[in-house]
Amino acid sequence: MQYTHLGRSGLIVSRLVLGTMNFGTETSEAASHAIMDRAHEHGINFVDTANVYGTRPGEEPTEEIIGRWFAAGGGRRERTVLATKVYLPTGEWPNESHLSALNIRRAADASLQRLRTDHIDLLQMHHIDRSTPWEEIFEAFAVLRQQGKVLYFGSSNFAGWHLAQAQEAARDRHFLGLVSEQSRYNLMTRWAELEVLPAARHYGTGVIPWGPLNGGVLAGVLSKLRAGGAARGSTGRSAVALAEHRDAIEAYEKLCAAIGEQPAHVGLAWLLAQDGVTGPIIGPRTVEQLDGALRALQLTLDDDTLAELDRIFPPPAPNGARPAPEAYAW
Image 1 (cartoon, helix red, strand yellow):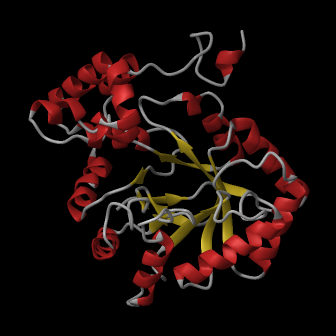
Image 2 (tube, rainbow, N blue to C red):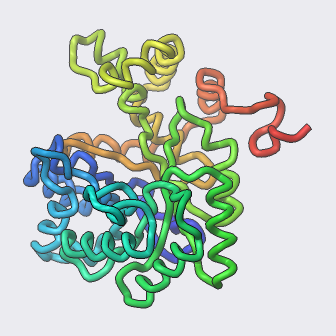
């Protein structure tokens, strides 16, 4: 396993992040526990969840599944860097969503209870809260840290200027601020390169890409369909992306075949090669899928391959001349 610091912090995390959104939804508790056990066998120590995963009717709360895994002992909690999130609604009453000091406190305590632990390593804002001042948010975070309930704080789905706002507000309070930003980022969705990645690099905030294979579209969807198999990237919103970008996806899969690598592994390896990326979130539904993802850590894409990927999936540049954020200047 490869490890790195999470942003500018001293916290050391694996370069693949185990995402748990499927736990309790598409993956049973027993299978979820097997995946987490295998992740530790591979040296993956970074586990990401959220207080809203598995909370729809007929699902099992993901945090509770993880909590029962921790309760089995054997050093599971001690070897895990645990990340969860706060913001999205957990009920229908006021103050059961967003980032008021009241909801932050209640949500953190509820997550601790479900996760059966005395602290959260990384608490992430699931979304920007445009109605709560940063002074209130960081004061609530400081209390949690003083109580020993949360060690580090991060964000998710922030714009670059939101990261700047947050970090400057934290600096005014002499607070460490955000050590990570969880952002949608993959070969087909590269707008984070315009401002989010430059801002994160400037402030020493580690970037954790979610959706690294764009809903399965970058996982060899065309090859799987031609082989007559089921392909995750051929349904729902992914089907729209497939229809709109079929030529590019065809070229991508041909490139992967030419270098003898699976498309999913190339997509993850490309993210691992990007400056400022801590590690992508992988969301395996089976142990076999988890095992396969490890290939990305062994894969080094040469300059020619990286250039061809840029040709197939061009980086965003408003003026087309310079890399972001200088693309905005003349």
